[in-house]
Length: 376
Ligand code: GLY
Image 1: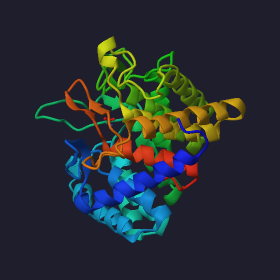
Image 2: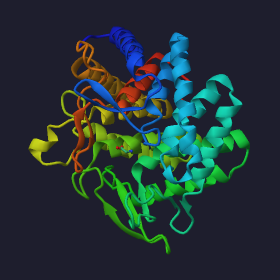
Image 3: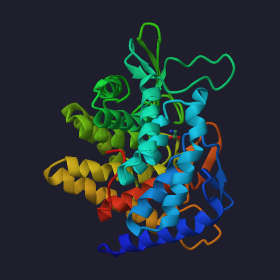
């Protein structure tokens, strides 16, 4: 392992170079998972649509390469059909429009982007179930499916869009809804050891909690590492937006659980409680997301804890760069190898994932102080 900060500059440079090369093929497409070296392009309505343009904005902001901004803006425009086709929208509005329209508005002041982000925030707020005080996750995946009562840990990362909407419009309703949802997360999703449920099912009529569900993890009581990463980062952002100490305490708890489960190479298993042979399988996207969240947590936490979180986040990012990067594989479009998207469904296992790439670049940008970061 290289000592000092030299590796960060090298990693940034490699990420920029590979991304510029990728723009030639991917253009204003929506990459999700890379198969045989080539990113499959997803529908603009898929939850991952914001990550490629979000990464382009981060890299543009530092490099000022106009073609990166142009493609990010084209992606954002292509997503209008999704925003206008109401039935395709679910709670991932936050992931999708924070990294596109909020990013654009933040950097350029674009009024069109502001309106898009406000529309997205309104749809997201409309998913709030007042009785259960949660944001409904999905729409039915198939005819007749009933999932009005399901909320998921990932949604913590969608809440910054609501805080942004309150900040931008002056209307506190959005923030009230985000805070109510996050309070429900504290009550029902976070276990006492700091691990989390992926899905919690509520009775949508009475609001009563029914049960935790394993979702993308190995089992109901297992510990899906990307779920932990969403919790660490999302709860830290919740503290950032509200100043509520309970969120910081929960962010610390989830971070300490995650960090205590890392092996020597600092990159998480896809599920910390999967049985042994399966646990060998990594999820680099969980590592990258947690690392970026830990860097923000380090800023929010004082004293020794702050130095500890920064040191551990840096170790994760450095290991991702040195042991999991595809820098020397010219026929691979992904930046990071070995991501795991949905093991129980058997989809996109042990492949580069666009959100892994995004959070890796975001983590590097945090180390270099190359903000702004659009969740904030
Ligand atoms: N938000 C879906 C996932 O983490 O795979």
